[in-house]
Amino acid sequence: MSDPRVDIMRVGLLSEGTHDPGTPPAGIRRAPAGVDGLTTEHLIINMGPQHPSTHGVLRMLIEVDGEEIVTAEASVGYLHRGIEKLAEHRKFNALGTLMDRGDYVSGIHGELAVALAVERLMEIEVPAKADWIRSLVGEINRIASHLIWYGTFGLDTGAMGQFLYAMRDREALLDILEAITGQRMTFNYVRPGGVVADLPEGIDDKIRAFCDTFDRYLDEHEALLGGNEIFQARVKGIGVIDAEKALAFGLTGANLRAAGVDFDVRKARPYAAYPELDFEVPLGTTGDAWDRYVVRMGEMRQAARMIRQCIDGMPEGDYTAKVSKALRPPAGEVYASVESARGETGIHLVTDGGDTPYRMHYRGGSLFALQALEDIVPGHLIADVVMMIGSTDIMLGELDR
Image (cartoon, rainbow, N blue to C red):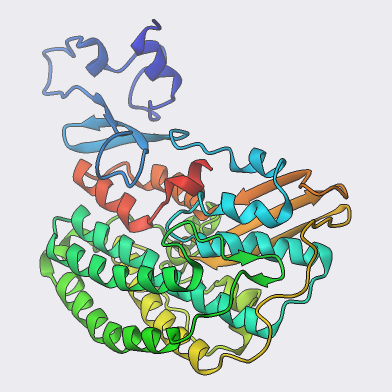
């Protein structure tokens, strides 16, 4: 077996000026630091990959001075699914099944991103009704994803009751998605050309009933967690990612908008029915954990607003275009992206004229958020690390992919 001291040196945890680069940290060798002054030994701690608060199999290797983080490094790859390589051996209309297993809490958005890429390559014109259905199920899925974040974020800060209420609301949404798609998690519903099936009869009444109660429930959620002074003390001013740093790390979604940067793919590069929907983009100011909370709560309110518009304005017509079962896009490349629950989810497809992609790259927002986390964690306490991971809403399925 390799020497663990060498392994720790290799991961590059030593911060500038903390230790002599030629020797391991004092806490590893348990070497006496001297008797001339009061000193503390630094420890290397594994937070994960089985830690219950790391939102998946994430391993954070942290160097601590007492309770304070000195340096941190994320070690990923424990949930590697091989999505990009598997895509090279899948038909174009089957790529969505792989995307469902990337960001598995927000599968509709991944399916839509890859469908848009194929449609642009083949110049497929999607019926208007399919566009509206896509936006409808996408916003339903966004709320369901944000409710998972809201519930677990409360747990990360010591709250418990609001998690149970969040799961109550999410179950109602999953029932709706199951009625529309036939699945509760891996939907396989959005395909190149449109969607698999039309909306079932009576689903509009079920969706309206949810929206009518959700507005009141959302007020209760905000009062229960956001109105708690203990929660506010835990998150305000902690984990600040300002606009300059957010842009430098390539953040998108709520993590970017919390810093005050007004960028939303639905507005900047409209797709599906979003050009015809009226909605606002919630923004923060400082980019701390509190702003990330406020932005996502605002996004749920806007999503419910768009769901109503989709139901009220749903056009008649076909739910899918007439496309061949064996899709063969011409040789070329294309990039298509959507605004998922975790930011910009993009698909870069390269084709050679065959019936499978030559190469597919999957851009997930969680990877960029994790890189920013490595930068902002030092200087905080161990308990703050758990909360900051939750505030960025990373998803290990799309991070490792």
